[in-house]
Length: 524
Image 1: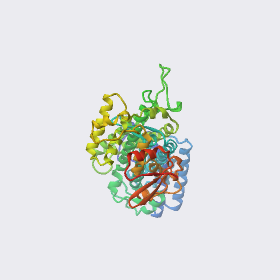
Image 2: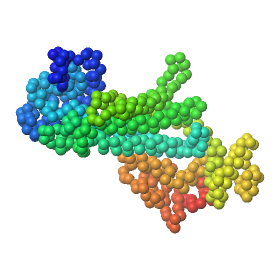
Image 3: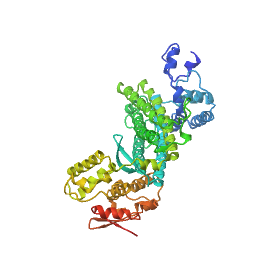
Image 4: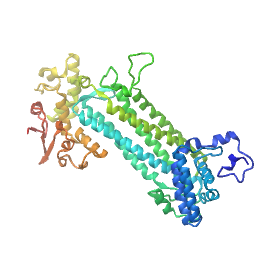
């Protein structure tokens, strides 16, 4: 038998060599060698369980552990040589172990199948990968929060259906994406619970007959739980599929953010400018500055979607227990990890370095964007919302037909909409006033509160506030962030909220003129 055949962990019932084409087709060492470290870690734990079960002697265990350390050193130094016949990482490591210590290496696989071995390796590797991706996601969230805190005063249009809808704060846009990423972090933490279950000791399908102490294995490998069914433990890859979906969802969120920023970086918007560090140029047109970093973030989402959909199709057609089809999990898992890992780092770089064009953002605001707030005002004056909505819409129509701003409508103009109207829209262009009243009245949506929650999740604030408490139970939310522009305090008296603000006096005029229900302003 050829030496390459002799390396195999199977073959006793076969005569002759496998077809070279099948050998290449069957081999996974080209990519599953990434499991070398966790494969050695699992083998070290397993030989200790074998010794406890009396299947290897103390001396044999020590020889195997020493040999595995040597294999580890070769891999870590980049000196490990893959040979013909090393069809996968398990075969390669055991072959090299035998070259170091001889026959005792043959006892390492007692009662162990590559089925439970590879399932264990995949879970160990993915557990570490999840930890790394969580750290990168939290770093991106932290970068977003820090930027939002610094630029909290910048106003810009908010869009629905890609049409200008209402004024928002730039920080609110940033934090909307941070909020989505925070759910991705939560999902990742939840996935880890199902990944961190130990299949080792399940054998190929029917368990291990050698009285292996699986609790010892669990402790050695730091798993939370032990698998409860050997067929399920070796034949399921739902934990990989769940990770692939997580990557798809995470990159869906980042693709959406990238799409917004690509639009905002165009000359037509000019809301932001990417630094040269995260831009590229054209080989033909010298003036071009392309947002390739963001375009690639957007495109990588499709790559991960394909990995997820493809692997689910593989799983869908399988019978119970282990089948060779499951070998397809590695490339999908590795590629998804690599892609998300790169995207998170690039996204952090883009967000931390982009430049905001505040005049362009605020110059894109227009009085018609406050039509909703006009409807809200009419509601506060006692008008049913549907009627208020209609009146505000007619006011916009009149302004457009006269080619004037909404703020230029006279009392007479407004009375054509509703005869009872007796006021002039004096402050309709004071976007910040309308925005702050909405923020103060609906405090759960305030940038200050969002910032607080994000800071707490990233561990960048000294002490958590109870995010589930009512607004009146959160004194000084913004002061926690030391944001002098939003130093707010709330008091509660007979279900009325009293707002203390350091804002300029124009808000007082606005409040007095429009009589916002339940709110008034006092000054320190």
